[in-house]
Length: 142
Image (cartoon, rainbow, N blue to C red; front, side):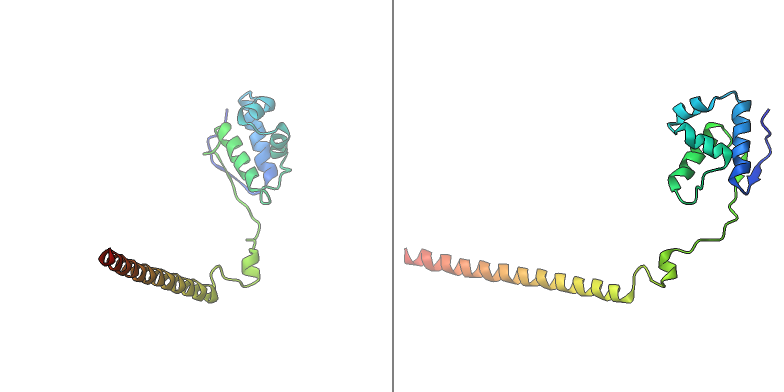
């Protein structure tokens, strides 16, 4: 019988043995789980042995969550990582996502765009008046 108490796991080996134990209790072969989930048997084996580093490959987190849901254990187990928070490359190099220089460039681009639009409308209006005048002059000559 599956224990209904929520378990928190701090490492993948403990979680893996929990998953394997519950899979076996449900009489599910790992090959069947692999076929139904469309996840390679080797990956499921590695989950159960705790040999997968899911921090490096985000798709493995999805596979693990799918496997946990397949075994109907999503409300019974929780994985808690004890690793320190990784600092992104942006934070390490003190870069900002949008610097003030980028903002200045954005505003100057908008000003240039609006100026081009204004010049285009002025040109079109001037051209319209010129063609109208030529048309009127031509119609008086005939």
